[in-house]
Length: 398
Image (tube, rainbow, N blue to C red; front, side, top):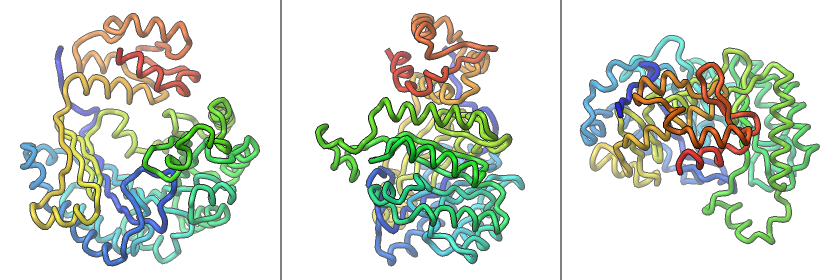
């Protein structure tokens, strides 16, 4: 079996993690939380040091600096946490450090995640001056009673005001995040979200189905099944998903990935890195990277992250070399997440064998159950298969 880690494109994505939040949302399992304000300055210094001294972790992993010298950076994503909590000028300073260390293309997609109510004109102008051209807003829901249950710090009106602010200030690429299956969420709530989306007309949408992780507020609340009284049933959540995909298909937004929709030309360039086997490097606590057959992640604690940068020049807490089998499964599963599907010829060029023959039994069974289809040399999930995607992936792992 031939094995290669060549990406689809020679471009590199960068992720920058800002872990600070006003409050910890009770469904969030990301590396984020409420930390002392005194933690912000040393964390940002460590973050800039990590970017400037990337050669230290690369040498630690036996990956030469040359491994990234030929990769232009065409996407930068500030995520969290709540990046919009810190001074807007700090985003510009971090971007300047990145430009000093990498070749950033003129048309690079530069995104900052914001929470409604944490963004003002002055901060937004700092972003624009620094080159930020895409704002991703964590709306989650427009219904205040649901937002309160999720421990969100904003209201539905805050979200509308933040979107209007971005539009009034000339931001031409706005992405909105929503979650289906939230406590007390009804069909009317979900339909109201979709109608408001049309009114607000963002370029990009991410519609996620709620996943309850064990070590979250919701995970503790719904530890026992008899307590799950206000969670929508799986059947209702499936209906939410179908209503959304059918509704958006009749509008300007087209689905291009299981959870993502966009107007023509506004796919998330950064997220496509993850789904199409392209390289990316993450900076900050809990950030992950994937390059030259290696995957690594940083220490999750902000304080420990800062201390490690001071003491050893990197904060790597996890590292693995991606095995041929792991690489094969990742390309398969992530490719299937895309509506365009997995390019079977590309698969053969990377792995040196015919996927249809190798997985003949699995493909036959999944096709008969209307979960996948093969069209024009692409293996794709059907609309039904997108909702049951985890079941499809499990079949290929047998």
